[in-house]
Length: 522
Image 1 (tube, rainbow, N blue to C red):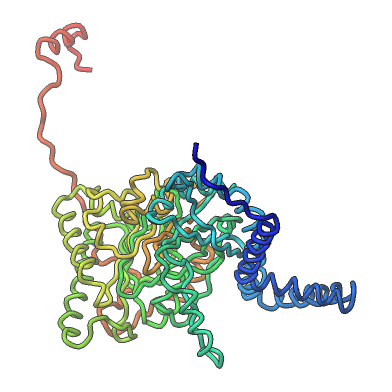
Image 2 (tube, rainbow, N blue to C red; image 1 turned 180 degrees about the vertical axis):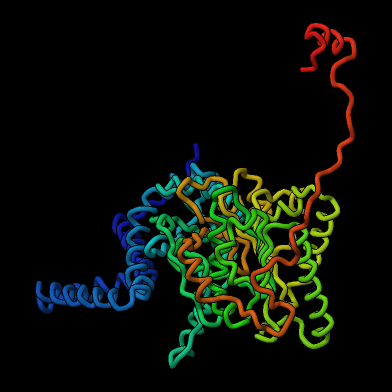
């Protein structure tokens, strides 16, 4: 037998190799964690120079400075101090501890060359309510695979809500001031596009359980950022209303009134100044919007003919503006002389599907189709709410660029309101708890990822105060100055003539009954 000669390393070489390997790993860890390394070095130096007082005194001063910082500006305190520290702690002691088990059982672990390959947890960023995990995907994975198991990931880490964002869920800040020239290049690196990375947001504390109070009424509304709701991360979600139409879908008692009245409230300053005109259609006989009637330039709640007239006149305004603005501008700019017209329709299905008059229903559908397809650019916008988003109920659903999904009854309705794949991306509007009135999902600007928000609650007393403080002007010089009346009177409906019908019983049976009763017809 011929055996190859075995080459044996001496013990000192093996020990030296292990020491160099451990030293290299420790050095690489120090480079990846400069803050922790600097803190440990500083603590050792202070202890060596000043003994225990060198550690206690800086700790007390740091705690006092942190308390004052949080008292003066809590948002920046969370962004620059508490958030990174809490995130680092939870990354090591919460997520790293169960990371392999969670990735494997949720189906995100892959096998390559007989080795298990796991997504890499790069960073954890925490705030008052959320933990945002930055995860590097395994080569060949897509964000859709994480989105499909978002509910599994939430419960794997002991939470109830989780969402996966293919892009960073936070927009880069706008830098101004003296140090802006230095911070802008840093932001370009921090917020760069990273296709290999997904962001998993886990709700640690549900900030949407508490009722959101009404937002302040601005004197001049910003139509590109109207504050309507509170986000899960305690920031304010704002609606971009200019040049868009809004569809609100939700089951009965899901809080559609909160969305509509929150919008009416933040437009109050523009309503009083004449910058905004609200044309409101309430097919429920005024049960929802009659309290705010002084704020509306047009209001139709009793007659479907009046509602059709209102929509026809909105089309007239659309045509007039198209003829006047063609060749001058592409998007209408609201002014007091040429205000923004917002047509608010509550329970749109009553006009498009449940109305028995076929001719009137076709007339309303024709006007709505024109407004939705051509009205955004000329400042004639539609804000509609409905319960059933199916195509046969709302045939022009796809003409609404902005959509809001409140609590829905079926899983398929989520995609009908927010678009295909929205439920897989975390918009679980069909699983709303009973307390979640006014809680819904919206699509973030520029991304297909949904965000969970809660709209402000406007009480009846708030509506009465709004109607008193921000009434629509009655002496405007244009066709919109029609406050507090229907666009058409309630028609007088005469009883339909009925043709005399024959007896419902056979003649033989009728004669038998008459004979038994003695000829008495009673």
